[in-house]
Image: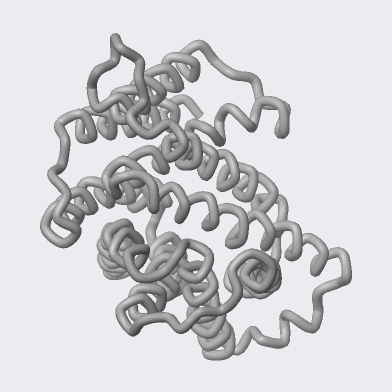
Amino acid sequence: MKNQKLAYIYALLAVMFWATVASAFKITLRYLDYLHLLFYASIVSIIALFVILSAQKKFNLLKSYSKKDYLLSALLGFLNPFLYYIVLFKAYSILPAQEALSLNYLWPIMLTILSIPLLKQRIRAMSIVAILISFIGVIVIATHGNILAFKFTKPLGVFLALSSTVIWSLFWIYNLKDKRDEIAKLLLNFSFGFIFILLSILIFRGFTLSPIPGLLGATYAGLFEMGITFVLWLKALSLSKTTAKVSNLIYLSPFFSLVIIHFVVGEEILLSTVIGLILIIAGILIQGKIT
């Protein structure tokens, strides 16, 4: 029972940290472009993961991996953090934080769709219902509730936010097949991803002097979106009697996020965003009940 209580504490800490990152992204993008935000956040994340792996005395694991393992890390690092966060941060630079956040939560439904061709899974009738419910939520958010007009307010931002769910789902599928230590492989993914990020900066942007608020925001994102919070969540899962006892807590995060976005970023939270998010999560929960 003591372990279960600790699991809830770790899970709630992770949920609260993740609830703050949408606001952190939006505020930081006022000072940095999306590539520089990813560049600095990745540095912080790599340092944090290096320290965690060293503290766990697992650093020698990196020496035991084969060339094939490192090639897989390069592929996964291209998907996440490189491609995923470029697309996601660009979406945040276009959309209000509440919309980018909510649309990004579609990824479990996108995972279900991609699992059909990639994992040869069969889709049930209720899965189709769940997918439709979540996609209605997307339309509600993207049209600001004006469903009949079917006119997206910022189509590029919506496209990028939805594309990020495809990239994350692909990463998730290929990551599932990788049985290495979670922290070790995440450190390698971010290390390879950083190479792609650095090359992109050199080719497309060049280095610029970043203001202190931008660096602080990138540091926060690196720690609490990409680094420490992931470890807290893994700890919660390892301590919990069953993963189901803590996994559904993750769906508290977007609603906490909306409150923080309102008070910190200053966005007026639209009713269409809340309704759309509820529909997206309802579809995810229905899907979770039948898998």
